[in-house]
Image (cartoon, rainbow, N blue to C red):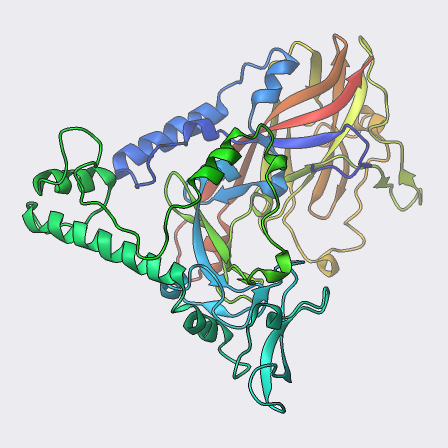
Length: 484
C-alpha cells in the first residue's frame, strides 16, 4: 500500500478504478462517436458520489495501490490490471537469453532451439560437456548433456552427440525413426486428407477458422450427418500403436485416490525437456487501445519504450511518520497519525500529497458520504509545486512547515489553514476525523480532482497555442484502522 508506516499498521491509501464501466466482451475498437460517449459516461460515473454507507460495501470496490495502476493519457483515466489488454512484445529463452523471432515460436514448440534442457531428475539446467564415448572404439570423444546438481548425464538414456552445438537438431534426428514421430505424421496425413475432401466440395475457398466452419465443410462434403457427431468420417488406423492398455486404464479409473496410481518408471531413464520460452508483455487500454506499457524486445534490456504509470501522473498520497520543523526550532514534527480513534472524539489525520509532474497541480479534496464517521478537510483546495531535482530546491525556501497541526488554525492566514507542511513538491494537509460508531477498519472515501497544464505542450516550442489543461478526477480510500 501507499503508506510509509510499519508493515503491521492498518493505515493505507488505495485508489479506485471504475473498470466495471470499461469491461467489454470484444477487444475491437469502437466508433469515434460511440467511443467519446462511453468516455463521457465513464468520467461522469467516476465523478458521481458513490453509495458507501457501510464499511462492508467498500470491500467489493476495485481498489488498488497506486504502484499497480496505469494511466491512459488519451482517456485521462486510471486503468487497473483488469481493464488492460496484454499482448506479447517478444520471446526469449530465460537460460541463454536468446531472442526468438515470433515466426519461429510455433515451429519450435515454444521451446529454446539451442542447447538448453532441463534435467529429468532435478529440473536443473543441463550443460554440454565432452567425455569419452561408450560406443564404438575406445579413445573417441563425444558430447553429452550433464547435470551439475544430481550428476545425471544423457549417457544413461543412450544420448551421445557428435558435436557440442546444435543439440536440439541432433535429438530431432535421433527421434525421426521413433514410433511417436511416425504416429504423429500419420495423424497429420489423415486429417489433411479429410480437410482436402471437405474443401473440394464446399463453397468458397476460405480456410478452416472454427469448429462451426469445419462442421459445415464436412456436411457439404457428405462426411457429416445432421447431428453434431463425426461418426461418418473414415476410420483412422494407427500406424504404430495398438490399444493394449485399455484394461490398465480401467483399473486406474477404479482407484478412489490418485495417489494410489503406481509410479511409472525411474526418472533417470526419462528424456530431458527443452527450456520453455518466456515472453515480454505490452499492455493496452481496453477502451481506446492506446499503448500503456511497451518494454524493449531484447531479453537483456530491462527498459521500457512506453511506461504510463499512474504514479507518474497522479499525486501519491502517504501517511508521514515525521515531518521536519522550521529551522528555528531545529526539531521534527513527531507522533503524527498516532492518535487512537474513539467514538465521539476528534482525531487529526495528516496526509501528504506528492506531485510527480514538472508543472504545478491544483488539487481539490472532497469527502464522500459516510455514516461511520464525520470528516472535515481543513485544506480542501491547495496547489502542489512542480517536481524538480533535489539540488534545484532553494534551501532557504524549501522548508515552510507550520510547526504543528494545531498551528494551522492559530492565525496563520486563510491560505495556509490546514496545511501542516510544505517541502519541494510535497504538501501535508490535516483532516479532522470524528468516528460515530465502532468498526474494525474505518475507511474514508476522498474524491480528488487534479488540474494541471500539459507539460508536453510546453516542451514543444513550435506550438504557440494555449497549453491544454488536463483534469483528472479519481477516488482514493484512506484506511485508518480500528475504532474503539
